[in-house]
Length: 117
Image 1 (cartoon, helix red, strand yellow):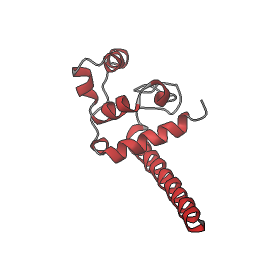
Image 2 (cartoon, helix red, strand yellow):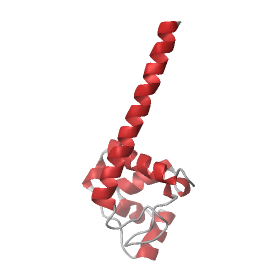
Image 3 (cartoon, one colour):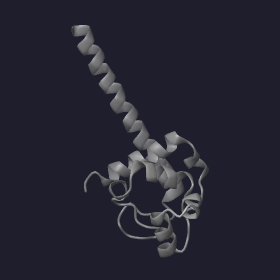
Protein backbone atom coordinates (compact mmCIF):
# COMPACT_ATOMS: atom_id res chain seq x y z
CA UNK A 1 0.00 0.00 0.00
CA UNK A 2 2.83 2.41 0.85
CA UNK A 3 4.46 1.74 -2.53
CA UNK A 4 1.18 2.45 -4.30
CA UNK A 5 0.71 5.74 -2.43
CA UNK A 6 4.31 6.75 -3.10
CA UNK A 7 3.83 5.99 -6.79
CA UNK A 8 0.66 8.08 -6.95
CA UNK A 9 2.29 11.03 -5.19
CA UNK A 10 5.30 10.81 -7.50
CA UNK A 11 3.02 10.70 -10.54
CA UNK A 12 1.14 13.80 -9.35
CA UNK A 13 4.40 15.70 -8.85
CA UNK A 14 5.54 14.95 -12.39
CA UNK A 15 2.18 15.88 -13.89
CA UNK A 16 2.31 19.32 -12.22
CA UNK A 17 5.87 19.83 -13.44
CA UNK A 18 4.87 19.02 -17.02
CA UNK A 19 1.98 21.46 -16.76
CA UNK A 20 4.29 24.25 -15.57
CA UNK A 21 6.63 23.56 -18.50
CA UNK A 22 3.68 23.87 -20.89
CA UNK A 23 2.76 27.27 -19.48
CA UNK A 24 6.38 28.42 -19.60
CA UNK A 25 6.72 27.41 -23.26
CA UNK A 26 3.35 29.03 -24.03
CA UNK A 27 4.53 32.25 -22.41
CA UNK A 28 7.74 32.18 -24.47
CA UNK A 29 5.73 31.66 -27.67
CA UNK A 30 3.37 34.50 -26.72
CA UNK A 31 6.22 36.94 -26.15
CA UNK A 32 8.02 35.88 -29.33
CA UNK A 33 5.09 35.60 -31.75
CA UNK A 34 1.87 37.10 -30.34
CA UNK A 35 2.78 40.13 -28.23
CA UNK A 36 3.32 42.40 -31.25
CA UNK A 37 -0.41 42.22 -32.09
CA UNK A 38 -2.17 41.12 -28.88
CA UNK A 39 -2.36 42.19 -25.25
CA UNK A 40 -3.08 39.93 -22.28
CA UNK A 41 -5.76 42.42 -21.21
CA UNK A 42 -9.06 43.25 -22.87
CA UNK A 43 -7.39 46.18 -24.65
CA UNK A 44 -6.88 45.97 -28.38
CA UNK A 45 -3.64 46.41 -30.25
CA UNK A 46 -3.54 45.27 -33.89
CA UNK A 47 -5.74 42.35 -32.87
CA UNK A 48 -8.09 41.78 -29.95
CA UNK A 49 -7.03 41.64 -26.33
CA UNK A 50 -6.83 38.03 -25.16
CA UNK A 51 -8.10 38.36 -21.59
CA UNK A 52 -10.90 35.82 -21.16
CA UNK A 53 -10.39 34.15 -24.53
CA UNK A 54 -10.22 30.66 -22.98
CA UNK A 55 -13.58 31.29 -21.34
CA UNK A 56 -15.22 32.67 -24.50
CA UNK A 57 -13.98 30.05 -26.96
CA UNK A 58 -13.89 26.26 -26.82
CA UNK A 59 -10.55 24.48 -26.76
CA UNK A 60 -11.37 22.94 -30.14
CA UNK A 61 -12.06 26.37 -31.62
CA UNK A 62 -8.82 27.80 -30.23
CA UNK A 63 -6.79 24.89 -31.66
CA UNK A 64 -8.37 25.31 -35.09
CA UNK A 65 -7.92 29.10 -35.04
CA UNK A 66 -4.27 28.92 -33.98
CA UNK A 67 -3.53 26.32 -36.62
CA UNK A 68 -5.26 27.99 -39.58
CA UNK A 69 -7.03 31.34 -39.03
CA UNK A 70 -7.61 32.07 -42.73
CA UNK A 71 -9.00 28.58 -43.26
CA UNK A 72 -11.57 29.18 -40.54
CA UNK A 73 -12.66 32.42 -42.19
CA UNK A 74 -12.91 30.70 -45.58
CA UNK A 75 -14.99 27.92 -44.01
CA UNK A 76 -17.49 30.54 -42.82
CA UNK A 77 -16.94 30.09 -39.09
CA UNK A 78 -19.13 32.91 -37.68
CA UNK A 79 -16.70 33.95 -34.93
CA UNK A 80 -13.72 33.99 -37.31
CA UNK A 81 -15.68 35.99 -39.89
CA UNK A 82 -16.76 38.50 -37.21
CA UNK A 83 -13.15 38.92 -36.03
CA UNK A 84 -12.02 39.58 -39.61
CA UNK A 85 -14.79 42.14 -40.08
CA UNK A 86 -14.04 43.94 -36.81
CA UNK A 87 -10.22 44.03 -37.00
CA UNK A 88 -9.84 44.17 -40.81
CA UNK A 89 -6.79 41.91 -40.58
CA UNK A 90 -6.36 38.20 -40.19
CA UNK A 91 -3.88 36.56 -37.89
CA UNK A 92 -1.21 35.00 -40.02
CA UNK A 93 -0.58 31.28 -40.02
CA UNK A 94 2.36 30.72 -37.68
CA UNK A 95 4.84 27.89 -38.12
CA UNK A 96 4.93 27.47 -34.33
CA UNK A 97 1.19 26.79 -34.23
CA UNK A 98 1.39 23.82 -36.57
CA UNK A 99 2.36 21.48 -33.73
CA UNK A 100 -0.34 20.36 -31.35
CA UNK A 101 2.00 20.66 -28.36
CA UNK A 102 2.75 24.33 -29.05
CA UNK A 103 -0.97 25.05 -29.41
CA UNK A 104 -1.61 23.29 -26.08
CA UNK A 105 1.19 25.32 -24.49
CA UNK A 106 -0.06 28.72 -25.66
CA UNK A 107 -3.61 27.80 -24.60
CA UNK A 108 -2.29 26.71 -21.18
CA UNK A 109 -0.58 30.10 -20.84
CA UNK A 110 -3.75 31.95 -21.85
CA UNK A 111 -5.79 29.82 -19.41
CA UNK A 112 -3.42 30.80 -16.62
CA UNK A 113 -3.88 34.45 -17.62
CA UNK A 114 -7.66 33.95 -17.47
CA UNK A 115 -7.64 32.11 -14.13
CA UNK A 116 -8.28 35.30 -12.14
CA UNK A 117 -11.55 35.94 -14.00
